Image (tube, rainbow, N blue to C red):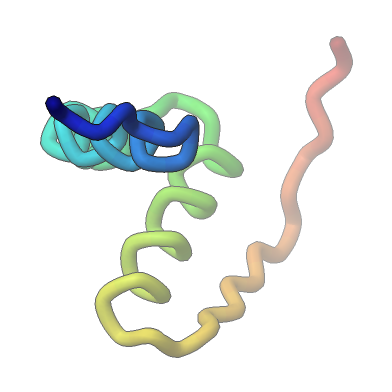
Length: 66
């Protein structure tokens, strides 16, 4: 008889199964037209790889109206 997985175990299994897809999606954000999205993706990747927080300062940004 096999043990039923807990919700946490099911979620972990699903995350591991889709890790490559998630990484590709994150990398694709580096080419976004939105500078804030590019900086956020860059920050996340650098922080994840170096395990250090990164502060990126962008000066003279024009605000886009929505």
